Amino acid sequence: MPRKPKQDRSRATVDAIVEAGFIALSQRGPADTTTRHIAEIAGVGVGSLYEYFENKQAIFNAMSQRFISDTAAMIKPLTPTLVQMPIDEAIRTLLNQFRSFLEQDDGRYLKCVRYAMAVDFELHLDPLYKVLNNVIMRYLMEHPETLRVSRIPAITYIGINGGIFAVIRHLSDPDPMVSFDEMADGLASMIGHYIAAELSLLGDVVR
Amino acid sequence: MPRKPKQDRSRATVDAIVEAGFIALSQRGPADTTTRHIAEIAGVGVGSLYEYFENKQAIFNAMSQRFISDTAAMIKPLTPTLVQMPIDEAIRTLLNQFRSFLEQDDGRYLKCVRYAMAVDFELHLDPLYKVLNNVIMRYLMEHPETLRVSRIPAITYIGINGGIFAVIRHLSDPDPMVSFDEMADGLASMIGHYIAAELSLLGDVVR
DNA sequence: TAATTTTCCGAATTGAATCCGAACAAGCGT
DNA sequence: ACGCTTGTTCGGATTCAATTCGGAAAATTA
Image (cartoon, rainbow over all chains, first blue to last red; front, side):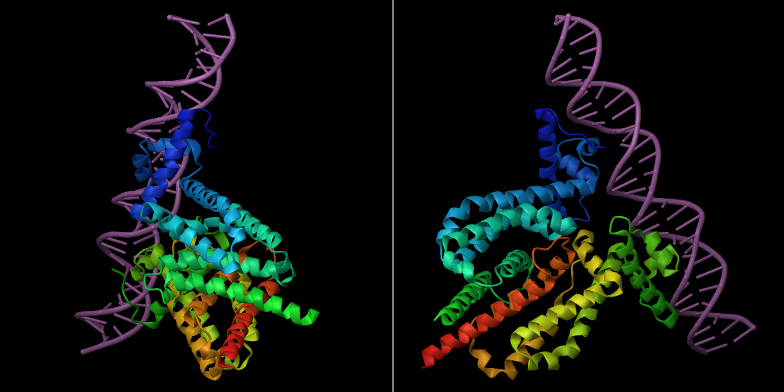
């Protein structure tokens, strides 16, 4: 029965715990991250963890949620710029931004995603999907001719999921077959060509 | 210091333990899968687990390895058939086979893969990559004109990683935006169109 | 069969996660 | 300022799962 923090002091404690979770997890890995480590790094007693979190797993969940909402917050302001770009450039930009985001703070997020991310990913990824879907929707409205491309929902689904996991996997891969830029370029031109092919097909039919 | 099994009896025990791991994990989830459960399901004493496995994590690792090698073994014999198909049909076939494979035995594998990251077992994907790369290499040799398509390594990388994770994620998604077939069709036509677009581009240059 | 090696076991140990009640701080009406 | 209620912190005590260990049982060898 964890409580909700009512005062500023306790909100700061909760924050410190989540932050300490990122530090501990990225430093020691999942096996050696104990509640005492987290408490020590956060500068609070072990007992305090259980004031606001059901159990250790709940701390990881909170971290996951914060990570996703931070990612979404990072992408949201890019929307206006992205929708003005050619599709392939937009994808390259997005992938590169995601990469720097994951690598900031000495790769803290990246290390954590590797471990903690998938506990329940459908639940936590939601805000990120929302933002990305929004980007795509605005893109379509900005370029109305692309609305006639078929299989847009399926391509969106694959693009988003494939993109997210390909980036994470690539950054975790000690010996990737292709460079990051090559991969980004590959995904960008795959989707770019798909749309071009669909549009020219439409042109043929209309003609 | 876990030992290597020397007799048939002990090899059967090791097998039973790994098998019990799959059953326990898919039935109770990662948090409630204890060494005692695994031992009980396997029909051995708890102590026996540690005769052949360093620790609980090592059991999960063995499961991961078995899962990947089973997957690779499932795909390998499909190679000759796949390389004769049009690319989009080959992709659809592969994705559907992967799906049924994951869903066999009441989704035992699927559930385990979902928990995979939660339990922190690194998927030892290497053997699977090897088989898939082999399929692609033979495909290219069977259809030499496709060798001139650019960015083949990058597209391969994205296709494999995107494909694996898109399938797993889709099958775990309680409310997917698109049907499985739509997704498979999307990936298939995306790659199909990419290759077609690249080839027609080459044609223009040559002409 | 006796000696040796391999396998199996489960009670005892260990250590991390979790609980809990006492002590400390903040808000609040008087 | 003062007492009262509510929010917050803490760390020793408790609980429970992972792991160990020493010896019994089974298989193998000679």
